[in-house]
Length: 190
Image (cartoon, rainbow, N blue to C red; front, side):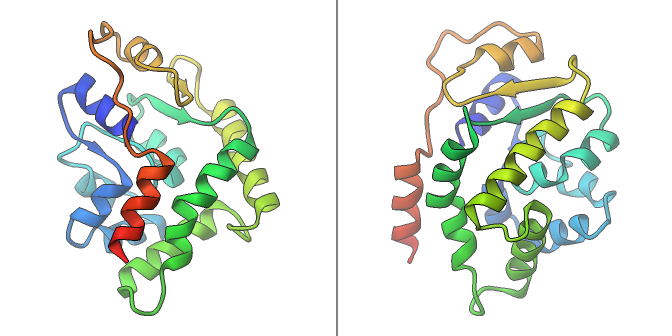
């Protein structure tokens, strides 16, 4: 969520993030349709947003890059696959594992599609880390350097401001949604 808040601060507009799927009626169903091939539906989903990060957009990065050829592509990554795995396994994967029969059909379908696009099996450490590394390498090999923004937690404003051609704000980079905060929020929702 730190990148979402940073992007909103720099662009002055809204940034689509996975949290939006929880807030917007029918977005889980719409994203499922996008993931199943209705790429033009992205225009409707994203019509009131200036940018998009995180899942589900990151699973559609190639299609979105083609559909929006003037958009920058942000590759947010960790220093290595093991660091990424530890974070993902304690946060996002916990949510994905908890989706069950009591959740809506739309949420279950979106979960299935996102996981299937990522890796098989998606929650096996070896498979997931290999998929993570392959994803990063594919993005780097596919997106032209002038369009690609690489970012790691802790990089601050610099890479984002450089890509957008704006001055760095005279305030600290937002630091929200740590793993601990994420887990606490999930525990409270149970």
